[in-house]
Amino acid sequence: MSTSYNRIAGQSLERLAALSDGIFAIAMTLLVLDLRIPVLEIAHSQQPIWESGALQSEQILVDALLKLSPRLLVYFMSFMTLGIFWLGQQTQLNHFACSDRNLAWNHLAFLLMVSVMPFSTGLLADFITYRLALVIYWLNLLLLGMMLLRSWRYAHRAGLMKEGVAEIQSAIERRIVIYQALYAFGALLCVINTYLSIAFIVLVQLNAALAPRIRLLNRF
Image (cartoon, rainbow, N blue to C red; front, side, top):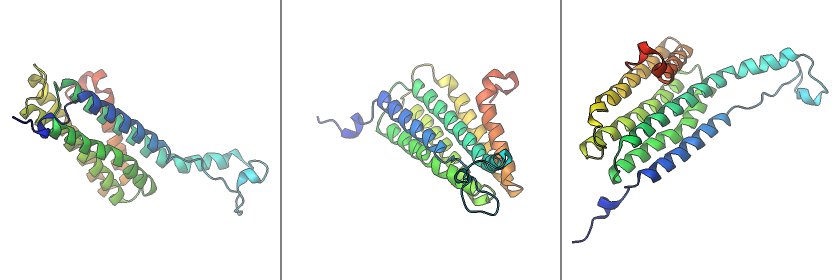
């Protein structure tokens, strides 16, 4: 009897983990490329300040860096986002006994959302006061969470889990759902102010990173 290709495709967890690490590394690197040295100009002149001989005032540089601060904030938020989802995916892969074609494609869809993160980050950095830019960024977060939840539930149904993992299944699913609900609430805050949304999302991410060290937050 011949073996179906779909039964033997996508079984290597090691190759999937290696591909994931590479795409996450590239996406994280692309984020910083959107941070550029500010072009300083002398007041009432279009001539770049470094061509004029010297800085007239260090305050000019300070002012230029302050104008760059929104981009730094969005960069920090997105780097935290990718770090959190990289850790989430690695946690899942560590609890899988094997993979199959469907699980591999689900993680490829997850990596597609990872590769889109530099775009949604750049869009939000350029239009940080626009609600649409914030909503697009949140949709990126939502799809990342949905793909992780989908892969975890599929692996459970398909019997791809290691032994003894069933007892932690609800804890992992609950964590994904809770944080996605918090991200959604943060996105809704853009009705008031997009900076308020960003501040809330950053706090949620800091909670995700620090919760294992803070007893009261371990429930998440």
